[in-house]
Length: 289
Image (cartoon, rainbow, N blue to C red; front, side, top):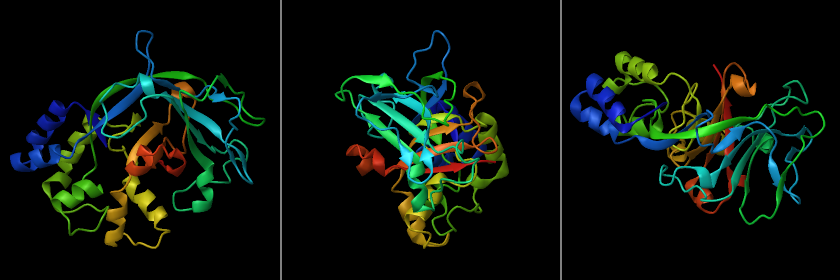
């Protein structure tokens, strides 16, 4: 839920938690990249909106029966800070993110993690460096491209919410997954300090997601298990632990992007699929206030 330097987050924890608890909590931090709108002097690592650069033989992604997806963002893998993440991103090529955003149907069709039939409504494409010449592809009829906004990357550490499975397993393994429990990491003073430190999801690559509502890994796990696992089912936390954040994109005024009520889009992937560059196996979810 929070992004910042390891030192700042450790100091925050030491101010609000017993020392031993603070050290255990700090050990659960994960490196992530915060993506911010780039200034004129900032190195760009990608952009929101605009038009995707695709090889000549690549088709614009379509959700069968609904229509073409909108283009959300591109990330230049080679431009990302080297060694800044603990996930195995490609060192080359471009990641393109597409989402069926309701432009064609007024929002009637919704892409949901718990609905396998809707998963083609969000897509990640890896255009490799050896894919041949690429060119910007005009948006299909009925789709208005979002304004192009360059992004720069800021490396840091990310903290998960206390009811995130990784934190809950550390401090309250017998509590109901995804729910607040009786422990100092759930104390309101510590939670307020975390939210004051970093109070908005933002755009990210890797690290812990910043969930608008419940931990997004739980939503993905619930969908992957076909909704058969209740929130008190230990399989849910186990499955949630198999997924890592690939990218999240927040609502962004500069790009005229509004996901529901100031929400965010999330793509998660299993590490083994990421290692094999199986971006077609990434799973999407979204949350809003």
